[in-house]
Amino acid sequence: MMQLILGGARSGKSRLAEQIAKDSNLNVTYIATAQAFDHEMQARIDHHQAQRPRHWTVIEEPLYLADCLIELDQPNQLILVDCLTLWMSNLLMHENAELQMQQCQKLLDIVPILQAEVILVSNETGLGVIPMGEISRKFVDESGRLHQQLGQIAEKVIFCVAGFPMMLKGEK
Image (cartoon, rainbow, N blue to C red; front, side, top):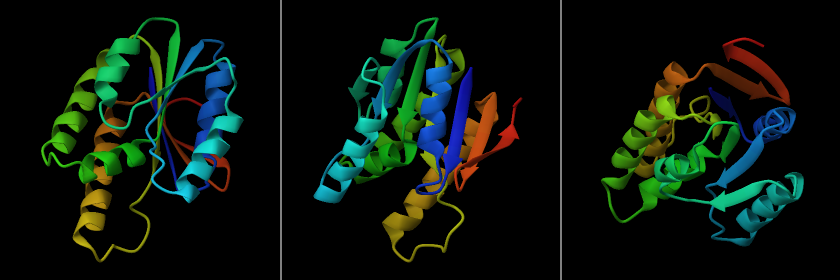
């Protein structure tokens, strides 16, 4: 089963995903997509690391998410990916302009056939002001397209606001 958890910054989406993973009683592998390019981002990463159970396996994968999921896939496993929007940023900023399209399509192709339980966490970027810059608009557009496509595939889609989950698709 694949779940997609969306929300704004500090909406509680990561906390919810981690609680679902803890409650699953499955072996958890956490795929972190963030890269620390400055002190503020390093502080965010440190905060997330402190929140996670120490016995979880953690893999840092900023670009080749689908390959990582394929490699980790097995029954009785839960894979938590946090977060898709950081992953999208990494892809869009990569020197290979084709990488974003290739990797997103690969993710969409493999997610439905995975045996593991998968939780994908992502920032909903389409609720704010339309960005002025080209790369910012492309980021919002591509993230939105990916969320729509994953939402169609996911068995469960949850939107978090102020720490409250709202079920958009699937059972509670």
